[in-house]
Image (cartoon, rainbow, N blue to C red; front, top):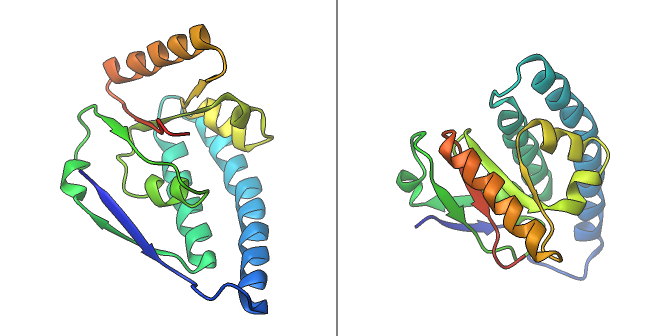
Length: 165
């Protein structure tokens, strides 16, 4: 079991946290445009590689650093290596994704809600990276998506799912 905790800003009703939130949002948008574009080009030049995950780790580190969030990871020995595994994680906030992306093996692919794949640049980078879209509103489509995730595992990749959302 891997456990992640983080520390960050705790005062809620002051001007500084609002500015930090705006700075974090602006940084996430710019980093997505720049790094997402790099992931798309790199993924097209080196198909089947793990470049998208390397870029995702860098994106995650940048967003978390600007937000002032410093994750602490325990149990990473369970995520070490490249043998295929299935990771399950709680999804409580938007910070979960960058916090989880950093320690996962480079061979890991996210199973993510289909609507994210329609976001410009971000979604294309996910497609090229071999991430798996899932439509939780359509049971038969969701089952097919899990079948695609199983194919990724049989091909040697790990997969992460967020069963709660």
